[in-house]
Image (cartoon, rainbow, N blue to C red; front, top):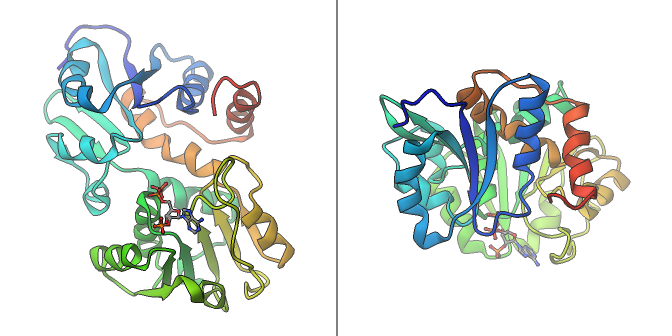
Length: 286
Ligand code: ATR
């Protein structure tokens, strides 16, 4: 581990990494709080990741974020894991601790719930059934977070049913797997509806569901944030649902890592949103 007194450095490692918005996000916080430190994008190929993980703590890094395709490898290669990372089986945040070694955390579910609560302070998991569309890596964090937030009736539906069944079995609790052909009907009576699929993402497949059965007053949120106002959110709003966009999840998931690396609890506010969105508009980050 690094013992030299150099300003702390953190990273986001991915392959590719050029489009990550995290450097702008953390850079904004560092500047805003007047902290000495840096946050760098590191393009690390999958075959180099294990080696990089050995070197980074020795050359001044205090930790970092990991994104595709390293989230599961990182989880497997560390010395210690937080309970929420254990539950997901993947890491998005690494902390290099001088005593404990490399600790893997997963703050995606935390970011998801904090974003909902920030946008809708009266949101309660207990308010009623939740529907989660999709069963990929992001869905796992969302489902676990919804369970922790008190959702007891969770309807999980995915185009590939077997993946939804595997996720439900892994996470346990009151999860009902609904066939994709019944996804539209499953929206009936749901208090919370989450799109974790890539439908509606820029360059992704179109939204193939109609939301005619979504209740007026339901809370709909999308983890896709490019575009910010997704076809799913537009359709939900047309049904009279309240909507929360997915950018806030990205912003909130970054908070625990920043606090651990740089020693300051950062805030998510309109300035941060504007900085991250502005960078996207300028094409500096996506
Ligand atoms: P992530 O880790 O970000 O969730 P992923 O693992 O690639 O990404 O998952 C993408 C999700 O979008 C999956 O639930 C996927 O469904 P499948 O498991 O059937 O592949 C879903 N998805 C992608 N394209 C879709 C489409 N055209 N219609 C419905 N669901 C789709």
